[in-house]
Length: 326
Image (tube, rainbow, N blue to C red):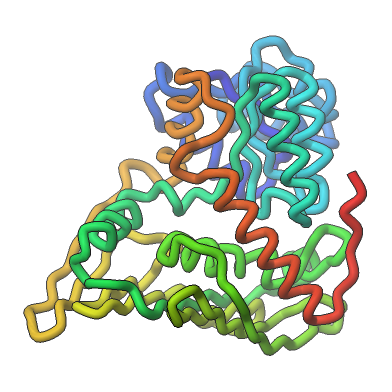
């Protein structure tokens, strides 16, 4: 798969580094696009990318590009995805896929109409450790899952802090990192919650910097998520079943976990990455495209839409107003 990259920020650097570390028969870098020629040229030289452009439109028009990785700010994802699909390119778009569920639904329809592949880059879904965890749950190793919890929080300073909270860029802790929490809980629970309660604190920028969300699922199952930008909470998670529990010291960078059977001996499972964790979602795009699929059957549209819809509802409960005009 020959990849083009939209934008040259830190996450784009991680993606480029990953592709450069993979077998060229799996993935290669064909082009990069930025809004500034200097940054595009510097990025291309750093990762030995043959073509670079000072506009996203020019990069997407490059005939050598088969698929595009979109790493632009959250508020640009919808328009950028549309542009790529209309140009005949497969798409892997950073999370959150869009800033509202209606936009995401339109993009999935457009990809199907164009016969192209599209997926949210919710990369942790494909990590070997979390895939193994899901296998243990499916096998009933910890019995029926009754409760799960996770938290994610970090300190942001300077320009990065302002960018993370900028409402014009789709900022706020829930969209930025809460999506990891809610996406993880959706993996575990496998259903949309039937209700939720939340507490939120708004930053001086008018977007959320802290929230705690309690979720209720069919059958009385429950989950709890805490997300914060401004508190160093770490990224711990736990899943509790009727026969045991699974503990993850870092669910977002998952490489180890402890399985604790009730009344039995706890044991650790360690599944390190080959590169940096991004390689698994890149391979998923290649697999699906080769199979002629429009979407992944591991991270299904329904999965991304469920989480986006939930984030919409949570933000609406906080009194936040936003438009889904497409």
